[in-house]
Image 1 (cartoon, helix red, strand yellow):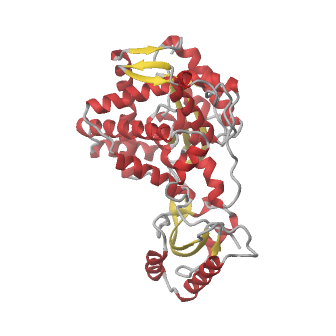
Image 2 (cartoon, one colour):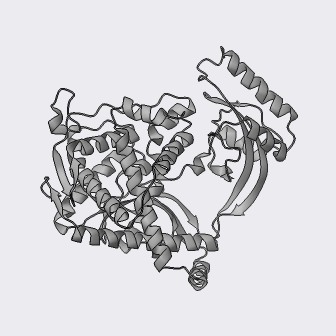
Image 3 (cartoon, one colour):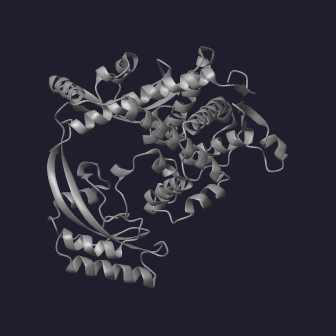
Length: 457
């Protein structure tokens, strides 16, 4: 019997908030041991017996705001935890200048957002943390406990979330006031897309490493090469992008979506056309810094047929994990009995939705959204979604954390290669937000008073 974890499908796990800890928690949620992050060496954080004064030593002052060595050490720990990888002293040493630059940029962004009266409320931070826990099937409070157990201050994650949300909100408010995407803009893009039907387009993700001063170009390139080494060693591209990319796409784990060659920097375009799917580029010099891209897929413009399904799911959560399927607890037996009863009595999606609303916990959605069936794993579950009659409940799908019963409501062939007006409008807005972000950061650096205690930063 295929196993299944109640919750959102992999296609829906987009965004930095879902990705920061995905690699260290997803395997736990799926019922297999997670790869624990190795303790960071002394190069990344002061030993326990080292005086606190060293940890609080000032690394930089940004318009009067202090960045300490402890801030840098905590961000390095968060990176190690996010990737599930131990980092050597040499790697930490190479990461340190870029971590400091990132923290400087975050201070500048928060200061500018505050100057514009943009405040990220504690409730927004709490909602973001809850979102991480929900998407990774974690109990409330489990994320803070996970960070604490790995020696990472919760404020490290909170500060990063606050900076990202504030900057994104500020940029979108500015764009909404200054820029509008007209119907003629969309029509022009649709006309161009129609002319390119049959050509190749590329699904890309990016890590952008800025160079604010030409004197720092060599350091930025070395950092990019270090990041690439970690990616080749197994670090998830989306997690690394969420931690270190300075493009707005970092909020989506570096995701650029489907792009055409004419939409890319020429240097990037030359490399992308030669890359095999799954490859990671070397650092590419682009205006404003370096870009590291990965090619996730290729397709023919205007022609990508796929099966898209919608469904409803009822989830019976276990109060304790199922560690021995041959010896379940009484609560687990009762959950299985309830799942079988649902499967035997529910007829159709409307009934399943009503049952699920009365059954599911808050972090188990009744409607997981549209699912591209070809991208579902494991294969046994994918085959089930492809073949089960519409409206018929599945057999109980058992995982370590609970049991699901699913009803497929619709299943249709759709041309995902056909670009919609909404997608064009979204892309044009994102391009303008990114341009505004880079220009604003250059202006903030030019006007700022930054006292860095590191040479070359």
